[in-house]
Every structure is written in structure tokens, then in C-alpha cells.
Amino acid sequence: MKIIKWLGVIFWGMIGFLVLWFIYCELNKAYWDYQVKKMCKKDGGVTVFERIDISKKEYPKIFSNLGKMKLPNRWSDKNKFPYFYKNNTENIKLGKLSVKKHLYKIINRKTKKIITKSISYSRIGGDFPILVQHPSSFSCEKIKGLKTLSSIDSTFIIKE
Image (cartoon, rainbow, N blue to C red; front, top):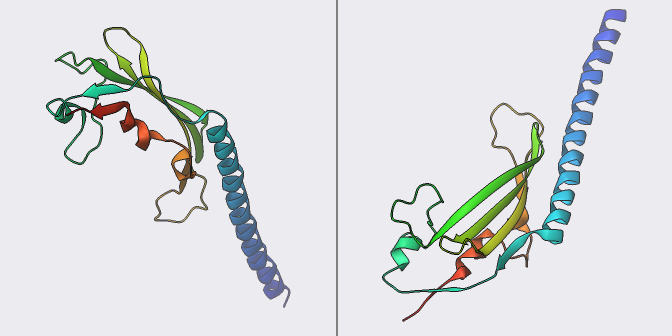
């Protein structure tokens, strides 16, 4: 009888541990989502310092068929396109839950002047471990009303 009692204590202890671990994971994600949201509202978003007029002929050099921007980076452009992008990712927290700051700039090659700057933050992971799963995430993109990387295209205006 004592063995059955101890097996029950061990079983329910393990269940309790798993429940507490799950709660910890969810609270930790909620805390870091809140921190990311605070950082996004403080200095996240897109700032366009100068709008650039481009012709319809230049459009395919800058945008893909799907309308996504495809500027060259500083090192890969063999044609010396007048604008290039530079990006940097800074780790704020590393581990099973990671938080990062993403800085993306569009720069005029000739003047070295920053034309557009985008700052974004993201949280990836921190989920309760399940065998097969894609980690959850949170970023500035999920905050309504904040200009994010998707609005960086407004740097270029097509002139007729």
C-alpha cells in the first residue's frame, strides 16, 4: 500500500512540476512580449529622411515582381546602384527565448547619407517544449499603428 501511495505522490508531483513549468514559460513570454512592445513604442518604426523619385524603368531594379524591395547591400552590388541597404542585428537576450533589435538603413552610395532608417524588436521562442513545433514570436510588426519595415517602401516614389 505504501508503494502505491508513493507512486501517486511521484505521479502528481511530476504533473504539478509540468504545470508549473508551462505557467513559467507562458509568463516569461508575456513579460518579454511586454518588453518588446515597450521598446517598439519607444524607438521602433521607420523614419524616412528623404523620399527618392524613381522612373518606371528603375522600378524593377528596386522592387521584385511581388512588389518587395530588393536593394543590394553595400558589398554585393556590382553595378554600383546609387542606393544600398545596411542591416545590423543586436542580441538583447539569448537562449531558448531570444530578444533582438533589428536596424535597417537605406543609404545613398554617393553622399553616404542615411535616407531611411528602420528599428524593430522581436522575441522568438520561450515556448513550453513539445516534440514538434515551430517557436512562437512577437515583433513590432504586430503592433497596430506603428510604421514598420513593411512601410519602408515609401522611400521610393514612382514618377511618371
